[in-house]
Length: 306
Ligand code: SAM
Image (cartoon, rainbow, N blue to C red; front, side, top):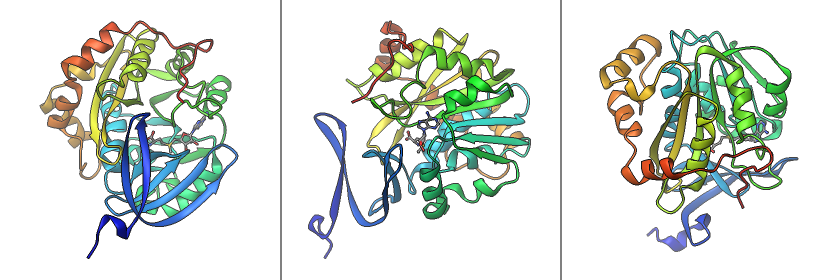
């Protein structure tokens, strides 16, 4: 008989006084890179799971929810079919995979600072990248994404920011600021769109999400928050889309379904018109917190997570 005692357990604190536990079947790999501590664990509930510095990034069982939510609202808000895309971070390669579902995409660049993480994901998480790293349209670079944006000029129709949290001393610390979002905006084509993952949207833990939302409003005319529940995180998760032209909140369900049919090859498992309306229909307490937030995150006053 299987009981909780049959397993080792991984505990992820979501806040200092709350957390989520996962029964572990086996450790696939564990390593310390130059930038972060990496574990790929096989959990009993969700299969293989990537954990960086003790934080779950994604799991085999529900990563389609996270990665579809991260990519499609932005790709569907690009004016005209998207031809080029940039992934900032992106470790597992599943973000790239979603972008490459668009036959109109001719070039997809992924800039992840940590080549060792990407190599471990390439080797041990083929279920997630599904060959995206080997697609001829893909270019993977290992450098700080901020330096990449500061030194290059290539424009992109879609940019998505799929980063680890800005932990003190962590590699993503200066990639959540007004100045950084300005660099992103300047590399988007006029009809382009960006999206990012922006942390939890659960009650009592909204400061991170609302600060990023407030900061993006300094940089983009259209900023639309949305959320979805990520089971392996055990909490609702916030995302934000920002553009200069198309407002995703004004796209109705029929328009989203039509755009998916026109732009995406194959079936999506999560995102469609109905899901779009649900995700962008933020609950009242989240909308109120967004409206009340006054903090703008800057290079001089970055958002540090402990
Ligand atoms: N899906 C994840 C989640 O739940 O937040 C995040 C995806 S991914 C694993 C995050 C990646 O961001 C990591 O692989 C990390 O190496 C990368 N990263 C962190 N800081 C970076 C930086 N300054 N430049 C480029 N990539 C960075």
